[in-house]
Image (cartoon, rainbow, N blue to C red; front, side, top):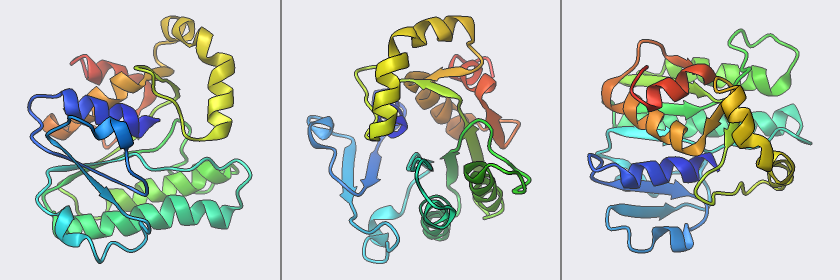
Length: 217
């Protein structure tokens, strides 16, 4: 869901010349009539050795891949969240040392890596490792509740069920609690803005994303 929003923002930005969408499945109709969009379908994202030539020459990576921790063991969640992310980031920093790397984490992530909440510890360790990898810039985005716009839907069944219940009241929540609800449009614009201009902090909390998106951050 987040990736769809960020992709739309990138394609709408006139200063972005080329977008490479990397994933395990094709975008389908989303890529039709998009001249600056290329797709790279990679069935095994743990092994990028065969596609490294396609991953060079980029200024930024917006890493939106993630998995829900619901029903997962810590070992499985760690593999998909920590090991996969660090594996891909390691390839990218070697191929593009001047790249800005932006990681979509989540509100409540535990930077101490010692808390009781499993997903927050794993996300916290992932963030900490990314910040020390040597990218020209590395930024961790921690959105709270995300309002999907432009017809975007989550590919995760549990999230789709959640949004079917809370979706009708999200616009109201957004007005009442703007610091805790971020739209897919705002997140995409904020990530692009930080890639272009940088930001004073490496960890960007939910209440800062909206301000950055409108040029106030």
